[in-house]
Image 1 (cartoon, rainbow, N blue to C red):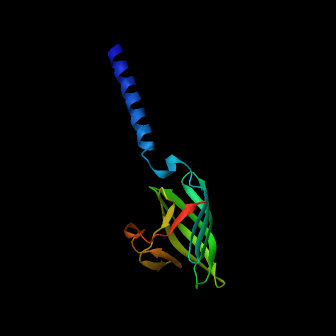
Image 2: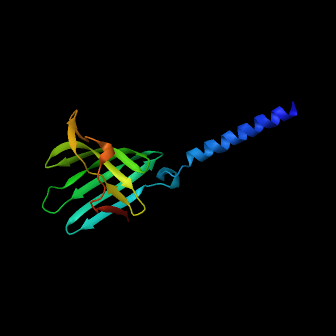
Length: 144
């Protein structure tokens, strides 16, 4: 009888260890908060993002100012999962309010926005295939 109880406690302990191991699987949200000010600047182009984080929810302000193009100022609201921030960017440009999907990869260097084919869905621009975005354009938003 005593052997059976030891086996049960061992299995419970092993299960608890495995469960704890699964929770800390190296995802960015477990390493620390990504809240903060981020900036990219190059030859007249600026991207500025101020993020706040509550668990896996991220939100804040996002501004694009590209040389020779209209400035976009708005809010980002999304989810952090598997080192990706996926969310909606609601912004005003030329007096018109728009919403588009945005995806940022969290890297050791900073945040890198993903680009790909887009389509309209329910009045919002979304990525046609979110699993095949390009993150190789070199515009890294670095934490200030």
